[in-house]
Amino acid sequence: MFLKVPYKIKLYHEMLTNKTEHNGIRQYFMQIISKKIKFLFKTYKKMMSKALKTLDTSGLLLRDAL
Image 1 (tube, rainbow, N blue to C red):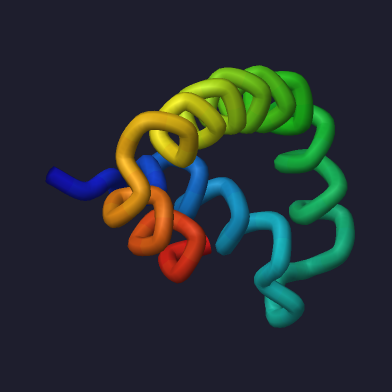
Image 2: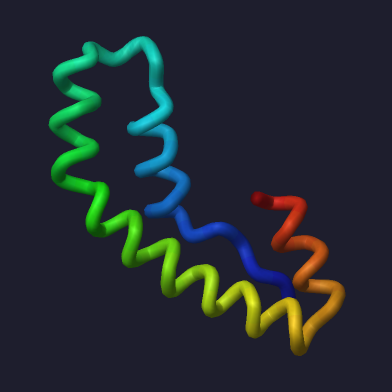
């Protein structure tokens, strides 16, 4: 068993780091999504720390994915 980065977090990260998008569109997405991203990353960090404590092999895979 190993853990992957959730698809939604990847998607939001791509949307925010996409430099080709118009600046106004990026700001608009950031306003909408920023709260959701913070929540997802908080919960994901908790999951990740638990995984690192319990499962060493999955923790290594998870860190490589990030």
